[in-house]
Length: 171
Image (cartoon, rainbow, N blue to C red; front, side, top):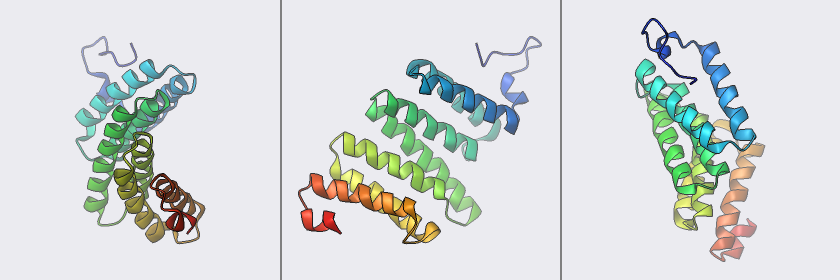
């Protein structure tokens, strides 16, 4: 449907521009927002294939597509699938950060989502690892007092409550 081969036999992905990519992400996100998780998931999976063909394994759009697929899975209560998608997003985004020789705040965003998935799956140790790594990135890139840094600290507090580590949770 959306990702068909053009009539002249040229694959659609060869015509992808940044503007087209933004349009498709917004279009797919509208399916997710309306609760059409299966359709949104299918479209993001197709977009991932297209991005890999066009850009390879290390491109910001690929990392975003994996992350957005994870968001769709999270909305559909498919926590294992969401965790896998966020892990892929972290891998791509870390690869980009290493290639550029600097940190990538998007890594922290996907790590937080990984932590949330692990929390929902009652894997508190794994959640804490993801949140701790996200916290380190946010502290470096945004500072100690930034609201995004505070939200990660709140997530870590939630894990501590699950472990009944109340003194640590209150920090």
